[in-house]
Amino acid sequence: MSGTLDAWVGRTIGVGRLPSRDDLDAYQLRCLNETLAHARAASLFYRSQAGWPGRDHLADIKDLVRFPLTTPANLSRGDPSLIALPLRDAARLVTIPTSGTSGPQKRLFFTEADIEATIAYFEHGMATITRPGGHVAIAFPAERPDSVGDLLMRGLTRLGAVPMTLPVSGSVDALVGALRDMQPAAIAGMPVTLGAAARRMATDGGPPLAIETALVSADSVSPSFKAALAAIWGTEVFEHWGMTETGYGGALACHAHDGLHIRETDLYVEIVDADTGGLLPAGDEGEIVITTLRRRGLPLIRYRTGDRGSIAESPCRCGSLLRRLRLGGRIGEPIVLGRERHLPREILDDAIFAVDGVIDFSVALRSAGHPRLAIGLVADHPEVADNVRAALLHHPLLGPVLQSPEVDIAVEITSDSKLTLCRKRKVLEAQGEG
Image 1 (tube, rainbow, N blue to C red):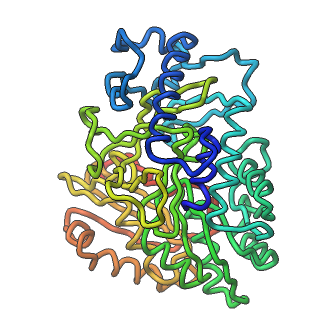
Image 2: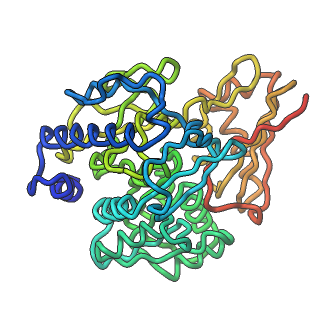
């Protein structure tokens, strides 16, 4: 990592050499002060935001804690707007739901400079997993200009790699066939997409595929998922954290695989208590809060992401100066099964995907009345359902909850014709009494 992103960071922040931590801290302080001044002057929202300090110049980067937090509701309400430049300066407008299903929509505004910053980050970040001339399969939708798939392809092209788009809107078999035709050295996509392709390849009798490295983003990555990709493709998995609000790129693992190095050219990251909003020290887990450093169209100041994580305290073994995030899933995500029985989603994912033959799965919860957890499996063999049920009931953490007579668990094989390859895995809550 120190040989890839750090050299680019030095050029980006204007020191012309490998930067020191003092160089990066000074750059971030300068950018924060410029962002605060611009937001207060140009955005109706920040101009009227309650709790804004009378003196908005930071003498120390830690003084940012004096400023109020912003939330996804501020982006969705839009009255007053966070936008701090005329809409004619927008190169891309993105509308996304706040909850992933039925929440109010958020609208984000990116300028040409914002898009260029993301392409540059992808160009240098992807050098961690590929090299000039390397063939990289892109398992993100890339048809729309300035979408995450399109920006990733543009970054890879600048790197000198060869990006190739995969058919992610069709069937698992079509995806697997394209991968066998491409024979890529690296792949980038969501866990659901890559997991479905790898597991189908392991059982369909077709020729095996070797993929050296995989960039996995946009959802949590379980240990069993990494183990499956390593066993089936021989892949080293690199996690990436980011969201539309971060300009897609956010933090990337290195070969040490001990946290994800933060995109500190464009983001300042804090960890706060999810209940009180108070700042937490390094090493403590809480909610990840971001402040954008160079964004002028729609600056985000102390924005609550809804993701859990912590800042690593010790230096990385790779030698990079960039701070590291350790991820912990989504805030408020445990599955509740009556009388405060909790199933952490990441543990449920890991337990199910550890069972051989699971290509994909969905989870539906009926929490009203008699709680019922329904697992729908995509698998090539019917006995996989029995194996998953047994694995869940005998799991040291999940078993005691699921074995309760007050909880029903159903595990069934479903058709993969309804499988959406590019999605985050969610728990769907059903209504009604038991």
